[in-house]
Every structure is written in structure tokens, then in C-alpha cells.
Length: 448
Ligand code: BG6
Image 1 (tube, rainbow, N blue to C red):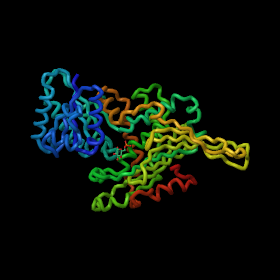
Image 2: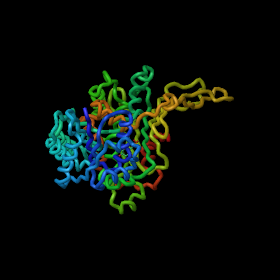
Image 3: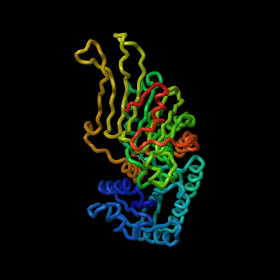
Image 4: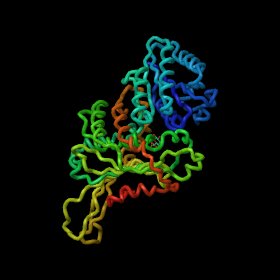
């Protein structure tokens, strides 16, 4: 079967940084598909490829066409249908994969364009998939609305809602680590865990995505999706099997147990004001606490901070364990035991235990035992988008959030979307003061 991607938003940042490299890698791996890139900015495929940094030695050059496309112009729809018809001429089994990498406000027009285009095509056997980027909507209400519109064009089975974090090796590994190690299962609950920290700091700003950020902000950009998916991976119960349905079932149970976030702070980095002529008033940093109210996790505080323009890029999860007993040396409380998952700058997992300080008399010192993914497996794992697109080609829905998860996640972040407190302004490359106070008020400190 021939597969053809129709890429809406092909001139955007996501296409340039993630999608085209993923398509290129998958072609190198032997997959057989075409890409029809849609955008307003270029008139030829050569100009488009040059701008996107795709050189002649890339297999994508012989598999891609560019159609100058504007949703307001009927003529570009006609031209797209012509190009698609030409691409599939002589083939009798074709799957069209319509990939919507656009602002949520454009989903509706895109959905109707897809319906018209698909209905106009002729071939022996035509099937389709529709791929929708995150954030899926602006809030719960618009997500419902866009979902109904999309479902008037395709079935739920044909729709793939993207959260590329599910394509990260680190996320999948969390589940394997939790559910394939009985000693971990034994301590992964409120009896042993004191608190959890999730830190996702990025060193860059919104850069060329100013227009996108103006409407989106950090809550819609990463908290409603990536961050809450991390929370589900940390706290869901073991699925009966690793099937898409069983995993989604367990994740929904976690999300349903989380109350709308009430303790949170939002901030915006200082230089954004000048860069945007003061037009971007959406938050670029969020810090909040969240509680998973299931039997195993109720009462464990989860502290989360994430955002842009920080001194260092750092993505990590810190699981702090409780102290129960005293030590043989009653004068000292040993440092806490912990597990530390680092995704960036390197992919590692550490267990923090106490060992004897050399040359001391029974003094414990915190020591980290490290699993380094690259050193152990000596493989570069594929980029998240490569894994995600490969799953789409294979019709495997295991790495895609279900609509129920998306709606629950919108419910959870609603107070953050509706907040009308002024945003704290933080100096570029520094942690907002509110992110520090949110954990310190409980007598705890960020691990990093
Ligand atoms: C994207 C957000 O979904 O995820 C970006 O739109 C963010 O703002 C990015 O930078 C982070 O993803 P990754 O894979 O670089 O950790």
C-alpha cells in the first residue's frame, strides 16, 4: 500500500525541526511514502526544501512535493487535488495521512478541507488517517467542539491525537521500569514515597513561535499535555496488558482522580515584553502542585515547574522517599533515599542510597548509582517524532492520548487557564520567585 502524508503547516517550526527530519529518517529506514507539503510561503518545492535545510542527498527530496496552499482560496484546494491525483495515478491501494500541524483555531477549516479533498479523489481503494497536533483545542469546550467536527470527517479509529512525549524512550521506560521490577512495585506508593518533583526547564525562549505563543502560553503548550502525561506515567496502576486501550484506561483513572489545580503560579520572562511589542501576555513559566487521589498515591505532593528562558535546560523527575526508622547512630538523620530520572541533558536513572563516608566512623553519605541509557544500550534511540510517525504508518495507536485523557487534562488545568492574577515577570535565565516559594512553603527544596 502506498502512504501519502498531506502536511498542513509544512512551513512551521515543528515541520522544520521535527517532522521533516523524522520523515527523512523513516525513508532511510526503508518506509515507502510520499509527503505533500502545504504552506503559503513558497512557490516551488526547491525553494521550500532549501529553506527547510533539506539537501539533495536526503531521500525526502525525491518523495516530497510542495503545494502553495491557503485555506481561504478555493484555487489552492483544486491544485492540491490535482497533485494528489497525479501522485497516486496508477496505484490501487492508497492511504492518505492528513497531518494537521496548525493552531487549534484552524482545525475546523482544515477538517472541512480534508473532507472536500478526500471526497474528490478517485482511486481503487482509498483509506485515510487524520493526525492532530497538540494542544487539542484551547480548553475542554473547544476540544469537544473540534473533536465533533473532526469526527464528522473521520472515525475515532482513523484519528491520531499527538503528544510527542509519548514517543520518548524515557516515558516508555518509566512504565517498563515500574511494572517489570517487583522491588520497585513494592515501594511505589504513599507508604514509601514522600514527594515527587517534576522539573522541565528550557533554556530558550519562544523565539520564532511568538505568534503561536501569543494564543497558547505554557499551560496549553506543555502542562495540559506533556506534563500531565508524565504524571500519569508516574502514578498509573499496572495495565492488564500494554495495549492502547488498557494503558488509556489506567491513565484516565489517574486523571479523573486529580482535582482542578488550585495551587499554582504563572510567570513570563522579562525580554518577551520587548520582543513582542508587549503583545504576548501569556505565561511562559508555570509552577504548581498536584495531587493524585488514588489509593496508592493519595497524600503524596507532586511539585511541578516548567517553562522557558532558564539558565540551563534540565528535564528531570525526583522521587523522594520517606525516612522511617532512626539509624544506629541516633545523632544523625541520613540523607533521603531517592530516584532521579533525567531526560536532559543526558538520559539516566539514578538511585540515591547512603553509603559509609570513607575515613569516618559510621557516617552515611549520599551516593548515586547510575544507569546511563546510552552507555548501557549503545544505541541512539529514535527521536520521539520518528517513533510517533512510525506508529502512524503502522496503524499502531499505543503512543497516542485518547480523547478522554485530553478532556480530563483540560478539566485539570482549567483554573490555570482562567487565572486573572497578573503574571510574575522573571528576569531572563532565572527561576521565577514563585516557583521557589511553591515548594519552600512546605519546607522542601527543589532538587535542582
Ligand atoms: C513542544 C512545545 O510540544 O514541546 C515546545 O510546543 C517545547 O514549547 C517542546 O519546547 C519540548 O519538547 P522536547 O521534546 O524538546 O522536550
